[in-house]
Amino acid sequence: MRNISGGSISMRFRSKKDHVLASIIQVLLMLVAPVAQGQPAVALDVKETPAFPVSPSNVNSFATPLAYYQGSIYVVSVEPPLSNNNGVNLRTVIRKGSERQGRWQWESAVIDEATLDDMYHTQASIAIDKEGYLHVVYNMHNMPWQYVVSKKPGDITSFEFKGDKISLAEKSTVKHLNKTPFPSIGTAAIPGNQITYPAFFYDRQGEIYLTYRFATKPKKAFGNRGFAFALARYDVPTKRWVSLGGSIKVTAGEAALPRGLSETEVKAFICSEGWQPQLLRLFFDRKNRMHISWSWREFYGDSPFVRPSYAYSRDNENLFYRADGNKHTLPVRLQDSGLLFPDRPESRLSSPMAYVTADPEGTPYVVTSEKGKASEVRYYRWDANEWSSGEPTPAGAQIFEIDDVGKQWAFATGLKVYSRNEGNMNWIKAYEDTGSSRFGFLKILHLQKHGQFLVYAQSVDGKSAKVYDIRY
Image (cartoon, rainbow, N blue to C red):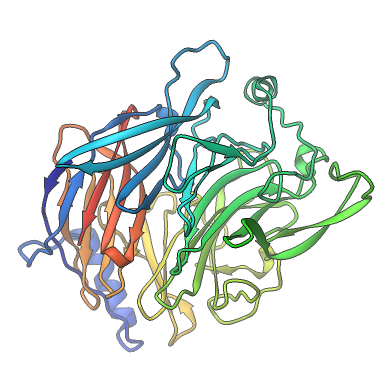
């Protein structure tokens, strides 16, 4: 790994009295001089792993391709095929990396030899549970669960398939005919069917959660399948996934049910007729409260991403609230969503991602990217029961993190890392990769206990990826 070091600082107004003036000053400073110069730098220890080949179709906004266990880094990627004779083209590969006697080594194994070439949907996500077992979900766009779990803790050499089998012919049907004829309610170890956008998250005790889109009525015509977002938690003692949310009745006319059943119920966290929730993201603060963000898309053609939303939970299980404290009835409906800018709900987003984090006191921050504007971060103003005005992020960063002492961090293509202290306004550039190739499409795994960021980044030409290990 290559060693580098750099540094950074920051600032923000927060009192009710100064809010309007502060907002004006923030915007002006960010537009004119978003990065302060000549201030003390925060010492960072930055190491880079050797790059490895990936497919340009590995780029996406939803996947969580990084995991960490006992000093080793794990990544999952969509990579070029060894040959093109299966008609589906790509592979899903897992790597385990570690430093031994000063030398970095990657081990690799193939999870799937017939991954669909789909830039926005078929990328893999990985998590490691508290017993060290690897969970990988991969290669799905309105398809049955493709899900494996390692047979041994920390090991990538053997996996047990716990999804629903799908043939190469069925994969070809999805790819070449854009058909998803999977009417079953699902029989995999994770509830649901016709899965898209799976992403893993960890709470402060190391429990893993999974968010994903699924069809509540998979037997119906495509436009009537009731696509919802699910939120599930993995129960380590029973080795079972537990769905959180509200119940939706499903009949035999709406899904292929197990023999003998004429109807059943499925659980959904967000579901609203005629709309699709987009990219449900989670963050757990220092008190282990769950913060949730997502956006919406009306169910027609190439409809725009709109209405970025937020909710939170104190028990992470049963009770969920809008930022203003109003309790949600589950599943969450569009009309009940806590919108970040309710005065202009139809404002279009350039990305469906609404990146959420929270400070040590539990104040939520959400980054959104509206069309025609730089990425902006907002925080919830408890004194006024409303979201703050948007503050442009440095260098258009879409990823915003806060560590457990309140320092704020922003990550932008380059790779460029900015930071600032609580109470400061100006960002300081803490690190920039000055190599010949630019890296972006960033994914972050924040290891709060270690004071460490793992940053998965793909080259702008799409052909390689690497991991930055950043210690602060």
